[in-house]
Image 1 (cartoon, rainbow, N blue to C red):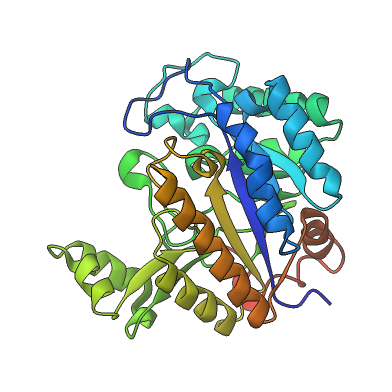
Image 2 (tube, rainbow, N blue to C red):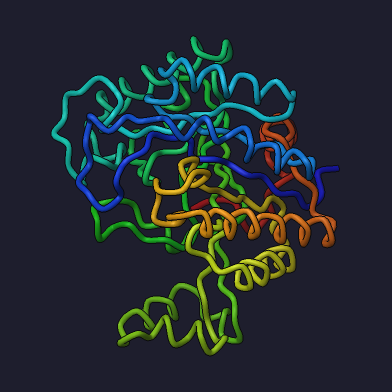
Length: 325
């Protein structure tokens, strides 16, 4: 029986300055040398990681070798993440709108995804079965393309987030339970409303956004917060409460994430220096300890695929109320 479990997907990607426009030449992967030390911290808790790699990672021999050693633990795995601006074929202008792969013409999105999938298969000797669109940018043709390439799971939807202001998708009404989309199972990134007014949900979050500093005030007063399960910009005390709420609400698979460049200072806004890195790992230590105390065990990608894609359907990780958009 699957029970209540958690997984950690790592957006394993190139280094770039998050403050600057997207740049096809920004393909640095030096931080990958720091991943084994981070991996060891999770392994000490018996936690496998799924590395969702993009094109610069999948075509860098040093990254291939390092990650190949890590997935040799037999439980960690490689999946796919598409950053279209650094992924051939390069047939589109580089801009914010096109950074959401789902906004590209269907044929171009398909070609980029096929090129990346093939590169991953060559690099690690196995075709990937789990996908995440960079910037969570799926579109109307994405699931058909994934199905043609024999993917089983998508994890592009970031529950409770809305990127439509940037030209991306709106997931504000997506919940945290797994559900089917055609041949695939969707595993949304877990995001929880906490606080005394948490049942106000998306409507209250939007309303607070229309007030000057409304969301910040609501959070500081303990009334209402939106908390994603990531150490990146999510305070530890709020994340702990979010875990408790998610478990209490019956979420069968808590989906955590972080960006791989965060394991080395200076690459992301979340880990600027040694103190930031120490806080990053402290966040994980306390969250993993809490999960163990709550009896929430880690799940490998193989275990998730077996539970989600076996028969009968995805009932092992979904709830009856989660069946659809």
